[in-house]
Length: 157
Image (cartoon, rainbow, N blue to C red):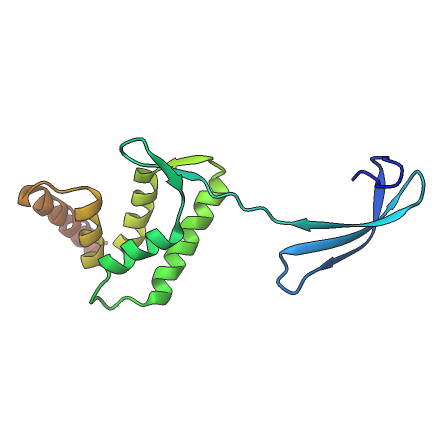
């Protein structure tokens, strides 16, 4: 950290304190050259990636948009809002941990579908029908048959 008094880049931390929200750290420092004391403030910078749409457009990642899609898929289903919020937080964390500056919509959609698949089969099929843009009843039936095949396999194990 650059000393505001002499410009030296060497300092030592004397004291560190976090705010109540624990998102800001105040550090008291001492310059190793001139012994001037000064305070720095650090905060965590969360940069949301840009979402690359199917048509090539880019827009900022919006967890609220994901929540709206989940709520729509789970409408009139025995799925709590708390469970949906956990899905959104987990996927958002996975995306941030991935460190990508851009993420295609299909990657987000696959994460949402995987979460719904283990949560509620009807919500999964509803979401899949919109996300995969089923063109006809055959595509819809194919997805249902795959779902039934996986359920039967899981029941045997």
